[in-house]
Image (cartoon, rainbow, N blue to C red; front, side):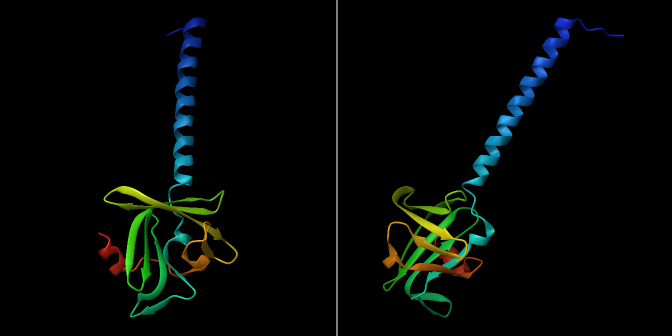
Length: 150
């Protein structure tokens, strides 16, 4: 039978408590990181301004915002068609989608879109895009948009 002294028992308890504490900190950091950076499924897809027009499923006039759950974001404005891609993260606390557009992996500009959960719309916080609201048209990004930005 292995009998521990009080000192040995205290040392083992401290070691176990330290490991548990570190594990809890690690788990909390994962939860925190996952809460802001991942785009919720109900915000993913194709969003367009009310004045936007589409021809054969592609935007032909106005602006469309494309959001993926993995953080992929693209904005296409027409005419003429000008597209930008970048990355996005969503803050549920602030209800804001922050989009960083990139060119050759360099940040070129940042946009913030406020989400209205009652109206289910996005609106630029800076007044970009003629200050119009974006309404969700589809729950997925169309294949042609993903292929365009590969």
